[in-house]
Image (tube, rainbow, N blue to C red; front, side):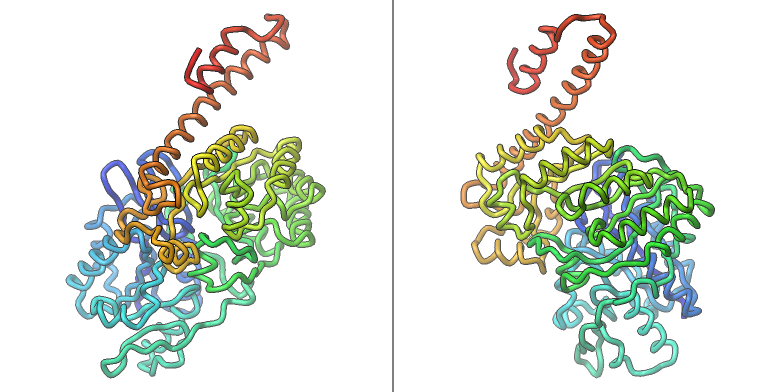
Length: 486
């Protein structure tokens, strides 16, 4: 069967959307460079190829295609089934693309998958005749079974994880169990994709940079995190054999000439024996590639982190969210901020660069708690950081919490970008105030970075004996950059 898998274009003036591969579909400013790898689509295409199906995979966002160019690729392939990965925040654009595909290929069947909880309800197919199927959650094997049954003309009722129409009614076949053994999956079908376009490089690790998964899921209970709640449906943690992960990295180095890699797991650093095995395997292969990972600050001991550094780790991402312990606790993150401070200090002492993420607008946010977050961010002095507006994804506990309190201000999904628009409020702060706090935080971080550069320059001059003590001009500049006054 001829199957087309797509991550369709999503753009607006001055911005491009990131969807497939992102736990937080949103708009990025043109020129920012960030581009996530579409993992689920890549794995699904590989599973279909292994099953001897004819497959085409197009990442219209990474390729920078216009909607018309993407549509033309669909038409040229002449598929019998098209699968589009969609998201709540891009859904109006996604439906417009679906309409164009149906108009051009009326006999082609159309399936949806991705981060849009409203699809996982029979009413969606009842109200949207454009879609023939909805493939639920972690969809690689559901898609494979759907394609097999369609090819053989068999009944679809045994294909778990599927919504479809039968005799005028919408049928849900039941939830498919998560993939227990990730090593069963073939590596993603990267040969379809523009591998030089994917960019997520903490610590400035060099391009081309490979994005890879070594695990799926997260046992922690953050109320705002979309993949565990929507794509997986629970908080189970599943891991790959570290040897197979290194095999994949080594193969991609040979095939694509990668110069670094980034482990974009939900949470990489869980399970000391696995982490140590991974580090040992990297050293044994002598791959000599710098790398980074998405991690938690409280699940990796100093000894393990040192072993990972010795195996080439040069940067790490830690999620913080807030500088107020009560807000962190209420978010379900279960992170002790004092433990975070110690972990960041130790990580930096090892020479591993640190990227931190913070967000404004979690329940309980006030001017005072936001200020604590900014002060924590500047005080930790990471190499890089990200500030955002907490955006509630439908299907998450956070969305339900806000809706029940009357703090959800809009269901215009176009506004759910997590950066330019606040669609929520707190007891004390409205959306305009949250946006203002975000902008202020960014300005203060920018000033902090400028001062850090100047401070480093002056220290070098002091070390060389050019100056005897810190210059008054630099101290006055620090005062200006920090407080806006000389």
